[in-house]
Length: 249
Length: 148
Image (tube, rainbow over all chains, first blue to last red; front, side, top):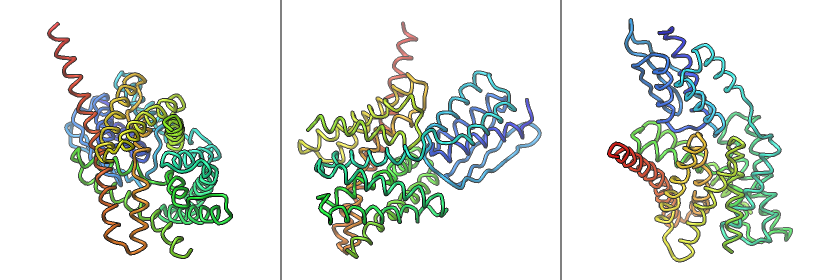
């Protein structure tokens, strides 16, 4: 059996990448334990919360426990898929511990597949489509497109500058509410509310809420409550941003 | 009407896939899951159905399709299920709830907030049930394989 420290390192890094990318708690724990087992460490215990991972290899001379802190959480499905793929290949014996570590570090540094410009365009498009899905008028399609695009652009920019996510979300929804009100004021849009709802969708923590409840149902009480809290904070940021603008207009 | 819902929900779900950095080969499947789930939800609620069981049914179907895709394309279920879930998330209701809170209409706000929680719970239940169905399906297949 290889050095248990190295195996721990691989498992922790795999878990950290998955967690930072928004994977479900059971998937992170399952993947870490599988990787450990593939490298010969049969008795691994993994405890995962959205803010940190505790991982220990039992058996051998003495159990070794390691901990890694997780500070940021986004949704990056490519990384989840990549780590999952690696884990499958490790189970099939295609990677040594050292190689797996190198590959994981590569995955960790991998940039987003899509440029910020494309992301903004796509958010704008999604906002406009949501307007129609929520039974808005086709005349509001382009106002929603631009409001959503401006809002998401603002969100990305502020998130890069200020490290407090709450502020990025709050200010983005203020910008969205202002833009929507502006478009309606100059006569380009008709239904402010629907434009705002559509434009805010790229910011809404839909996945977070869903995963929070899934975690609770699967018995990961700490993770479920933690995610629920984060989802609530985000929803609160968005809601209060919009509400604040509407109070003053 | 139905056509425009089909097209916009497909595009919206695929766009969300891109925002969430989905691998390029999975974008179309994301859009597909989303539009199927949304259509089911839309048709049910348009004909007088309650949003809560409609969300449950839609997310159940999204879950089943996502699991099938996950097996077929050897990619985690999460990648596909996101496309299905996002359109179902009660953004409009949550927005109304926050507005009522800001306008001090607390009774209405709590009413809307309760609906948001119920729908979110229904969506999660739908996903869990789809996983359960998958387990049952695999057990039955295994049983039949052993017998025959």
